[in-house]
Image 1 (cartoon, rainbow, N blue to C red):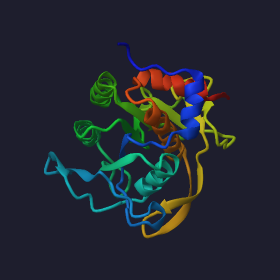
Image 2 (image 1 turned 45 degrees about the vertical axis):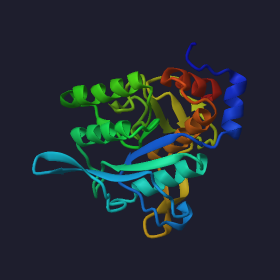
Image 3 (image 1 turned 90 degrees about the horizontal axis):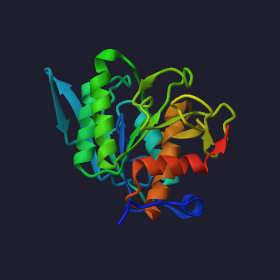
Image 4 (image 1 turned 60 degrees about the vertical axis):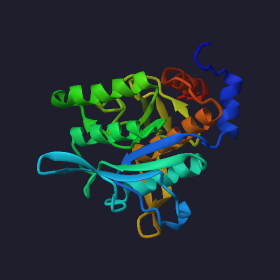
Length: 252
């Protein structure tokens, strides 16, 4: 028996009727304020922090919430687009949205070990040669395991190389300059998808909202759309899922 396939009609139906049920999304970010009223006391499957202490990286089972605010905003968008998806928070970003390649790798490993289907990365690291092996190693490993990666492209432009978005097996998402609500297929570069990046009332720790703009808030919309597809077509290979999104996207 071959791998699951999907045709254009099934893509359209999944995007309309899918709700993310049965799909597990790991959110690698700054943590989540689960008490925010907009999240409805969201019950995270995992809420951990990856911390570097004394030269060692370890997994802390209690994340201490959102240390920056970014993760709560991203989680709110995903929850809106895929309300039945199971979400897990893996804090890899610090109080100033900083991180290290080795910390991110450990977060990815932990999410994979715990059985997540989608890894959501609303961050980008400069494509430095010294970190190439670390990023390529886990990106390739997830592809081979059938785990989907959705990552935000650079806000500096589609041609600005950042990892993990600039690996071909990653679903890379940029900000649509026309702020369209639907998925748009970019015409060039490794950032292949665009959508609205403006979030006028993004959830923010403490129960409030903020107006935010950036590819960080476009990527979770695509993660939500992908979860809708996977909820009706589980086991879809990352290559076929990316092709399905391309087929659903409108030309730029």
